[in-house]
Length: 259
Length: 316
Ligand SMILES: Cc1cc2nc3c(=O)[nH]c(=O)nc-3n(C[C@H](O)[C@H](O)[C@H](O)COP(=O)(O)OP(=O)(O)OC[C@H]3O[C@@H](n4cnc5c(N)ncnc54)[C@H](O)[C@@H]3O)c2cc1C
Image (tube, rainbow over all chains, first blue to last red; front, top):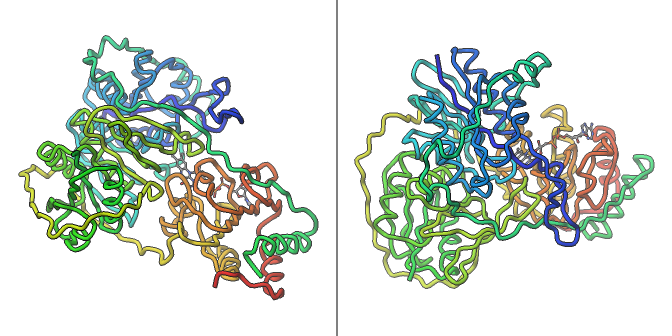
C-alpha cells in the first residue's frame, strides 16, 4: 500500500488568455483556470502506480479562489481525495510560499511514500516547487522524470536531461517532478467523472496548517506582465501547389534569402 | 562590494556568466564547480578570483547541501547559473533551505538601487513576467538571451578552495547515464531553419524537410514532441519554451501546430513561413506567409521547383 500525494495547481488557461493590444497586458476578463498539463501527467502517473502496487492517491492544492470542480476534474483520473488551501493570502504566492503550504498540507494528509509534481506549472513556469517541497520535508528529489517504476521501497526513474538520459534509484519517500513525456493522461469516462463528484475535497483553513508569517510572504513580486507581440504579415499563399511553390520562391528571393 | 557566486555544471558558458556578473557590478566573482571540470586559465582570463571545487556526483539533492554551505561562508549577493535542469533543481532546494527567492530561465537581469529585477517567460512563453526579488542572496538561472558582455579585468591566479562535506549519500543512486551526441549545429545561431512537427508521420519522412533545408543551406529544428517524445531528433534541436530560441533569417514551420510554448522560440526569427494543412492551426497567425497544404504533397513540389530554378541560398 503506497501513500501517494500529487500537487496540482489551478493555473491560468494560457490558451484562452487574451491581451489588450494597446497596453499588452493580459485582459483579466479572459481569465479561465485549469490544472496544468504536467500536473495532470503527475496525477496519471500516481494512479498508474496505485493500479500496479495498491495504494491511495491524494491531491494537494494551494491557491486562492480554488474551484472544487477543477480539482474534481483531476480527481476523475483516479485520485481518492484532495486537500486544498484556498486563501487570499496565497493569491500572490511565489514558489517559496506554494512549497511551504504544500509541504504542510502533505504533512497534514499524512506520511507520503511518493510526492509527485509536474515539472513546471502551466502559467508561472517556475520549475522549482517539487525540489522546494523536498527540501522543506528533508526528502530526496528528482526532476524531469520520463519513466517511473516502483520496486519494493525504491523507485527506479528515467530522467531526461540536456545531454542524455539518467537512470536513478531512489529510496522512498521521495519527491518526483514529472515531465510531459512520462505518459498521456487518460480522458476520464462519464463513470469516473460521476464517481469523482462524490469524492471528498477537503478545504483546509490556512490557520490549520500553522505556518509562521514569513513562510507566507512572497520573495518574488510581479511588477508587470506584458505580451510579447510580433508583427507578422499573415499572408496566405493560395493557388495550385505549383503556383504556391513559385510564389514562395519569389518571396524568398525578394527577402534576399535566395538569389 | 557584493559578490557573485556562479555555479557551473559545465564550463561552456563560464565566460558569459562571469561577464554578466561583472556587468551587474558584482565583485568578487567566485565559481563553484566540480573538481574535474575546472579550467583555471578560463577563470583567470574572465575575472574569477576564486574557484571552489567539490567532488560530488551530479545529484542535485546532494550538491544543493554543499552549495548552501558555500553561500553561508561567502555571503554572495547573487547565486547565478545557466538555466539547466540540474542547476534549477539545486538552486530551488538551496533557496528553500535558506528561505530565499529563486527565479529560473530569465532572459534579462539587472540590479537597480540594490534591487534585483528580472524578466522571464511566463504564461506559456507568450508573455514577459517582470519581477523583483526580495532579500539577499537571490538565486537566478539565466538563458543565453540574458548574457551580458562586459570588459572584465583578468585575474593573475584565482584561489582554488576544495570543499568537502561528509554527507550521507545513500538514498539516491545514479545507476546509469546514456549521453546523446550533441548536434554539430547550434540552432540559436543558424540563419535558415526548417522546423518539423508531428505533421510528419514517420521518422523517414523527415528526409523531405532535410532536403529542403539542404537546398537552402539551412538546418533542421523541431517541436518538443519530435525530440522528447518520439526521439527522432536530439533534444538540442527543439525550439520553444523549454528549448532553443532562434533568431534566424528564415524559419519554415512544417507540420507544426504553433502552440504558445513553441512560438516563444521563434519570435525573433525574421521571416516565418508555415506549411500546415489545417487552416485553423495557430501557427498561421504567427507567420508571415502561410501555405495551407498537405506537407507530403507540397514539399516535393517545392523541392523540385527550387532545384530546377537557378536560385541558390545566399548562405553557403
Ligand atoms: C510546460 C510546457 C513546455 C513546453 N515546451 C515546448 C517547447 O519548448 N517546444 C515545443 O515545440 N513544444 C513545447 N510544449 C508542447 C506544446 O504545447 C505542443 O504540444 C507542441 O509544440 C506540439 O507539437 P507539434 O506542433 O509538432 O504537434 P501537434 O500540435 O500535434 O501539431 C501537428 C500539426 O501538424 C499538422 N499536420 C498534420 N498532418 C499534416 C500534413 N500531412 N501536412 C501538413 N500539416 C499537417 C496538423 O494540422 C497540426 O497543426 C510544451 C508544453 C508545456 C505544457
